[in-house]
Image (cartoon, rainbow, N blue to C red; front, side):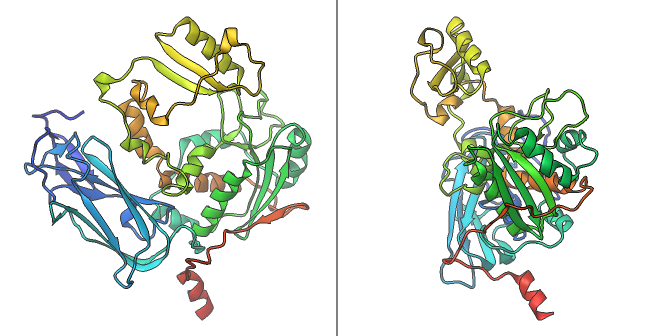
Length: 432
């Protein structure tokens, strides 16, 4: 936390502004306020693009409390078009900063983004995005994966990926295509994927494979944005990791939305986080941006008791509820439903109603550090970077060619007859 009287710095692109804390009641300066983020760059294609605004006062001090949720106004237009089909939201983070997000429902040659406060342009507004500027459903992949990584400002390496792949010096697609279904196919829910020539193919194993929709969606979204490496892999759709062999011999590479210290699954961003990124400003109302604008009451008014709600998908959750009954002043844990374990109300009940997601923010266990972690690691561009880097690094380990196996079906891109797009990269090829 910045304090008055201290010199402190806040990066804004290549410009460094000397800023200190501004108290409530200070006069907002549109010109000195900061505006930055990936949503100001045409080449960064996301389901919902976003950028940040930092309120700064007339003395150059950074606000650390909200200057008011309507302090800034944002207007997005396509200069060449009569109408611009884009939804815009400004989210007040209550700390002097704002997230501006917008979802485009059509592609445009150029975009103009105006950020104003008190009728005056903020920072370097207006911002011109020299297009083409594509919407989420536009199938126009960047042919060079390394160029795409640079355009997205992805990190050169991700430690978690390096750790997970260290267990697999090489991967033989022919070998795992036979062995993984034999070992896990009957008892677990698996998807066998092959990405070939930037097309996605799948074969499912097991009875409960409905959650494949989340993996299908992120793979299709990636292939619309960048040419993926040819790669063949298995995805675990369950709630727990599968590869728990202690020996490094004969272990199998399995991608999961979960992991642990005693398992060797290759972890990915969770399915619900992935879905929230793809459906931000769509059918999903809870995502990493909206939660930052609903941080609950001030810290001193938050409840010190830890809160947990959920179903009985693991035995450890049963112990947590028992612990809550023993120490109610420390833990408020209860089940909202029972599926896997016999319901013993004397030990684990009674079943309680669901509570609002934002009720969890009334507890102190949601800390400032958590907000900053989400802002720096869990935004849409971070999730896309993680998935692409993961598949890119995994593809390098393959010692035989990935194949479209017998029984696989092609996963089709969604139809977008209402707002089709014309990919400039495909046009160039046709002209040549």
